[in-house]
Length: 424
Ligand SMILES: Cc1ncc(COP(=O)(O)O)c(C=O)c1O
Image (cartoon, rainbow, N blue to C red; front, side, top):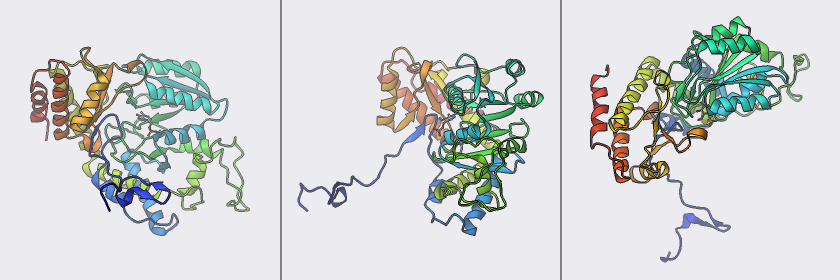
């Protein structure tokens, strides 16, 4: 090969086939996706199995039992939707909502708007309730709205990464029961990082993703739902021609508009009947299984405490740099922090330099907050003292280069002080 010829792996007879995949190492401290646990990456590289191989269906059973524990529920139904967290949301909403059903969506950030959007596409009569970004709802405000509108379903986000706020849920499930409404919760950004007490809080359906505090790749959505929800969706059970046995009839309710995200079909697939539906994403199931094993292996409470301490340390460091934190301090998520971009600097330039010079990614923001705050995630595998100190050191250096007079060393000292006094 002479100097002018590209290496053999960059050309083919049809032209370029590009270089070997070799992404640069990054520290992902945005609001997700985050760095994946090494054992999850290894699990994903293990061999394929056929979807009805008894070994694979055994793993499916293990996944159900692991996610019952992650969700702290006795629910029978806990399984995976193939797709990102949004697919889990759609599976729950499209299966529950029949056209014309009234759905109440309290909105405190971008992902409340997403629930509104999806519920509307499902043909619901959607009633919304909004509060300013950076705040959450009082239980009484939700109670009044539920009493007034009498929805069939309340759809609510737990931690909305767009505003970094966490909606307290402990009282909401009981209120929904009082008015005979179902409660769906999007716990994408909190599962594994903050308590999600499915049974204790009477949550009827909950969905999540892997790419935040579960520290897996995006592409699988663990969901769980109770018998109240199962009874509602079962009234819409339909079995495809071609796999239907002679003696099985449809339930007769309105057909669920999505085939792929049809919960009763998925229940048939995730039950001992193993009624054929999609081909389960083998590698993502391995990933989801390993994420849950790692999270449960650490212990849920220990993991929550690790996230709380990391956020306290990060916030102490940011404030020591004289940066201002965003949002209602009483309701901040403990795995992502919003911080105002100081007037003296250009937010996107700082983010670019953090990435190019320190290989650290932090998050931008959407809608009304765009250009106003950065969002710094401390989720899952990333949520460790060394990463907090690295991030603060790098941010301080980049801010100083960009003309913001942060006291040298103050941020790291403040973060150290939190860790020095944190319970072991
Ligand atoms: C609260 C919340 N819900 C839903 C989603 C959508 O997740 P995905 O991009 O995995 O579909 C996100 C992603 O950031 C989120 O933070």
